[in-house]
Image (cartoon, rainbow, N blue to C red; front, side, top):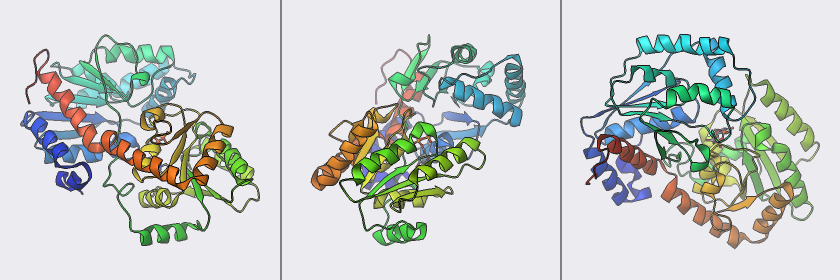
Length: 403
Ligand code: UDP
């Protein structure tokens, strides 16, 4: 696993020096992260890197995971969907199922941290155990338009925390506690993002059966209607009339998600007999995602709704020109015509793809700017710095923090 010093060639030693300076002020303090799963999902992915790096910096970071059964996780899935604005039945039974497991976790999980950092709604009720004023709730979901009943239920817990953290200003809600805005990040040294030799990229593309003899336009996403895979095919068709190219839609397997399979079938049907549309249902494979992104000429993220949209940072980090919708966290990552291109429709996406295919030097410049945009804003080291500053601010409330 990479150590902190391994990031020096990417972000420079000054960034690492800042981290060390901040971490020194937290030496001996215990920072306890709590979430609901050790594997799978973006939160676990980030914590898996964040916790060892904090330890590398001398902060005593630890990570605990709450326990829960199917009934509990069915309710928390409903809560998740409702926070995204989906109308969900959320009745007394759901509240009871949520509270029953929460009570068990309250009884069994020890909260020993000098900072207790709770992630997402699943463990939120642990705040019952709050014994000091350095409890933080981290929300990874866009809660700009939540189902009010579910939000009000959670608000009863959130307002007892000392601070709340959201990914972007537009994702948050008005609250009577301090709020911090911390964007997510990608790890430039993970298998998904680290540099790959061209031979490895070629070998992976050959294994996946993706030829690279034509410009390759790619979208990597779960097969989800909100990622608009059908819109991607429509945009490609409009481009293909004028410029020969190939479209790759690649996404994870979703055996436990009936809708995913349905959308996959729909997309397959839309692609019909066009041999230049490749649709890949992939198992979880970070190196494959990395290689596909590196082999692509243009990367799309034509979502209709989006959280932060990590795939955009991943693509930009590889220096790729990206055409993506102006939704969710995407405009934070792409400054239009500088670090990528933002679209609002199928026609807009097609127009921008043609423009990029016709001017490789413009495409290259956008990709280079995109990579710098990610280097400066969306790498794990920036995320670490934000968290260290957040922890320090809880110890020095109202004072100046001298570094
Ligand atoms: N991803 C992956 N394999 C796939 C599809 C997606 O590993 O087949 C990854 C992708 O690289 C990114 C994450 O899943 O890291 C998706 O995060 P994002 O924020 O873009 O969208 P979400 O799926 O959370 O809505």
